[in-house]
Length: 341
Image 1: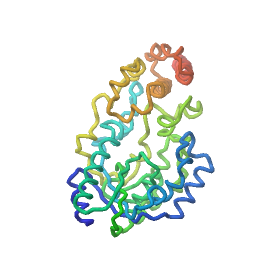
Image 2: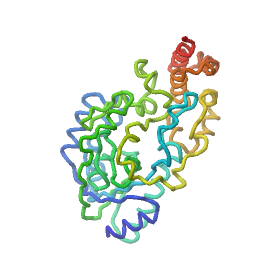
Image 3: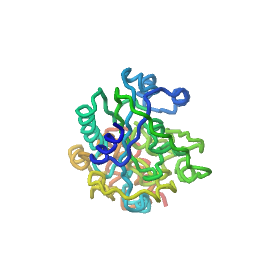
Image 4: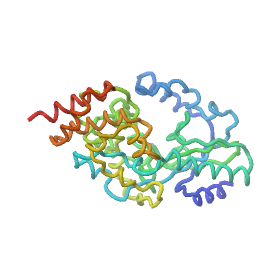
């Protein structure tokens, strides 16, 4: 059954397939309890609300017996950080430059799920970052890779660039062997983090993480951290791109993950002029749409303030009276920064 599932998954466009038992690991719950107790989930209240389901696959679905973990390679063709040198442009994380991976992966998961039910039987459920699932620990248990010091899964074949999806099934499938941790003494990801969000022991402080700050965080961004965001307006790839294992990752050729033209190097001034209809048009089918226009404008204004490009002053001043307080405050900060000698 595993060989058939693997072959069908690869046929449907997945790049990596692993199998794990659907049983709880006490270490997962202990780490999750500590994470929430220390408040590191920040504004992500849903992490605290559904801890029992997240820490144990059978807490989410009592009938599950095995987990099929699927990985999709989205490795970029060039330097993921090249745009950070262009202050008048906004840098969008590699994963969000193409189609929304949630939609792409879920469509393929459903196709594989239908095939499994028709050919192998059993009941199942599919997930892709939309339910309380411990995706990265399960992926590591499935043999897809190991969790690096940046907390993300690292694959010997695809480096740090893997989208993850899961199929919970009632089928009893033998597990794949777990891979050893091959990070060794390397601290490249820890040293690369612009805000010092990684402690080097595989733990992250999301409230300092640029991905959290630009995507999940609502309200104004801490002034002490703004200068470290550079021109990152949605997500951050620094720790991922620094991983030496990426040299083994072939650039994706999947058309769904190739960057859209408007996502590669958008002008900050153009983004600052967007209204709601324009925002929806530009970011239709993109993960960026989930943060809404106001959060994007806040991020764009921080990038403007960091640019040192006085030509952006008119665009920043135009948002000084914005109805959203965090946007207006960020505009004021950007204007002050750009007006300084």
